[in-house]
Image 1 (cartoon, rainbow, N blue to C red):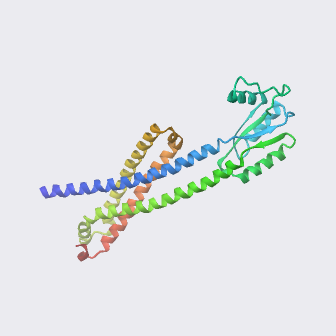
Image 2 (tube, one colour; image 1 turned 45 degrees about the horizontal axis):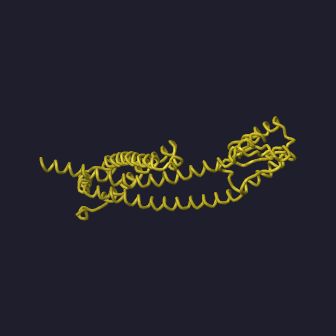
Image 3 (cartoon, helix red, strand yellow; image 1 turned 90 degrees about the horizontal axis):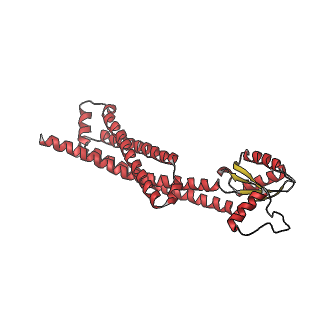
Length: 293
């Protein structure tokens, strides 16, 4: 009786140890995945909030400016657009500089032209696309637009830095993926090593490979789901702690990103545990009885 209890305890210990090992690997994978997605989310938010100013001549009245605003806002490359009259622009500039300074001292005229502020979709945030957009606007509203104002260096820096970020995250992700697969595979192989005699005994009494695999594969699915949920919860806890210590991390995540990371961890955990279990079982099913010792 005591021997049966010891065996059960050993099986439970091995199961828990396997879960812990998989959880730690999936936790690291989840953190790196969240960090990469979070940085990309911040990048996209910054890109789609960059304001491009389109200045118009005085001959364009408020009605025409409103119509042009609607047309610009509906362009395929535009994420948003709104107009600003000369008086509104002057008021904002005065508040930013010094409310006591009168900027209308030049012959009593407003020095700021009326304009439309446009933001681009991230897919069009390249210097080449921006130059094409500028040409299109200047042609479409010829004689009405004075200038399309933007900083070319921002477009160049963004694309260079984005490529570096993507390559860096992909490199880390592939390295981590390789390590994760190896560690989870070794953990499961060690767990099945203690059951190699049971597997061979079932095979010797006539059990088919499919029949032998079924309980182990179901167990692998359970391990993957449980490990993924625990790892996802740990990632969520880490995110919550980081957001409290540094508000910058608030910009790096939202519910969509977290759900993607959570689902990815669970799916990855299930696939790897199933694959590792299948390969380990195939090894022991093909192994001769003498080689089991």
